[in-house]
Length: 179
Image (cartoon, rainbow, N blue to C red; front, side, top):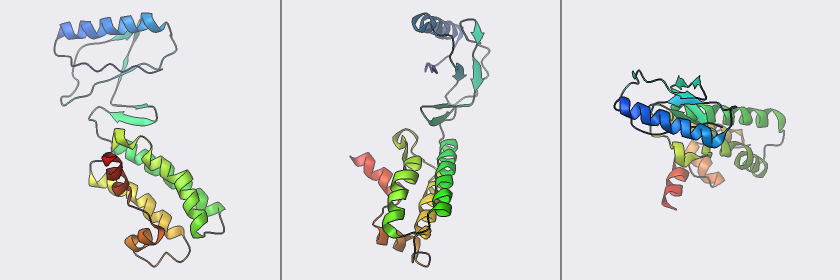
């Protein structure tokens, strides 16, 4: 179990309040097998002298942490999550490319929608990419996929997406925001 407490710490009174909250949480949970870390989120660097403890153990300060499969960083940028999603999806694409001989449209589309796309869309509303480099990295997965299908390699990316009746990943994310 991981614990994250979101509270702005401005002075020693705030430090003491956070520590009191942590102590109450420990009493409530009565579980000593936690992966307890502290991540300071905000605009300023964490140069605080505050040290927090749970069950007498000092909390480790980290700059990023994975929770429910999503990487959260202190600067709230999702680049690490985008890179992890890209790497997982690419590994699955490579596996499909090596193991599937018949690369017909129906077979490959089913494999893509079932095995690859969930990696680049998992919890996307929590880490929706903002920077172009992150968006392009995710789109690269879909571009690679569309080139795997027989008779599609010579077409442009837009033509491949149109033939396969697919939206770009960004268009899918924006469409989900409207629902």
